[in-house]
Length: 343
Ligand SMILES: Cc1cc2nc3c(=O)[nH]c(=O)nc-3n(C[C@H](O)[C@H](O)[C@H](O)COP(=O)(O)OP(=O)(O)OC[C@H]3O[C@@H](n4cnc5c(N)ncnc54)[C@H](O)[C@@H]3O)c2cc1C
Image (cartoon, rainbow, N blue to C red; front, side, top):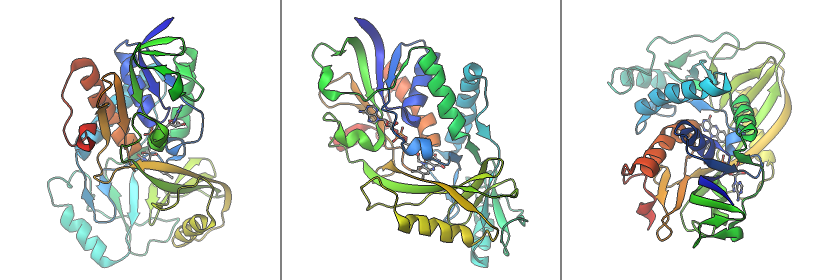
């Protein structure tokens, strides 16, 4: 019987960042991932320490931004690639009140490192009131990250491209099919609702649509944000998204969301474009806006890492380290993120 320290269920940001921690520590692990397109795979990958509605920041944003550099340098050491694209967010202002708010907030200690008080005039999109730059914001090359990480773990026989079957667990003997495990960590995003061990944990689906579009011109080298985000994926291929919908629970593409995206795009981009792909998936959100980490109430070697919300990259990378330290070094979890808050 094969033996592993960890079985990881889920190959999104949560599962992959956690696998990375185990790779560094030489723990043995297997990732099970069903291969469906999930929120992680269609995400914009933006890492932005500023909430762009009110120009405020969020819990542990500075620590998360710092750790991002560390973890991606560690990942580059074995994939050979840097996935951080240093194109900052440029937020198009809607009115003068927003500009004043930005400048006021730029004076505050926690926002000074991020809100650039020098506004810019973008040249290829409409921004009559200029745009504010979020210093140090960046994005991850999501496509190449998942492609390379999947190839790497597959080559190392650490990736199993199949659906994890909850009925095949023998929890008493800690076996799954022909594998003896020490721990299982469930990182299934919204699919945790099908997990009989954690289905009572209140993860709320929030559906997001995004577009891939073809534009035959270059755009200012920023992640341009008005209602949604616009940035290049490769020459002439652009990402535009994503929407938020707390009510839809079915996976199909909805025309009204596509319309919302097109209207958003047309409000600042006046050139020609062609939609080449529309995608939709569910973010796993939590009412208190904190991720969910920790251990099953009864089965002490079953764990959960979920609830990354709209910040899969920052939350996934930063909290994978907390999850690792909790599992391997018995470092207590902050009660704000501990799954115990739901027991
Ligand atoms: C349109 C859109 C844009 C976004 N943009 C950003 C952004 O710019 N920046 C950012 O940080 N975040 C963004 N997000 C949010 C981010 O994508 C999520 O927070 C993140 O993907 C959650 O990762 P996860 O690994 O927890 O879950 P998921 O991405 O849902 O991954 C879970 C994985 O588990 C697998 N799985 C589930 N059950 C099983 C099973 N039984 N067996 C095997 N495998 C299983 C699924 O197939 C899936 O691959 C965006 C989301 C959307 C929808």
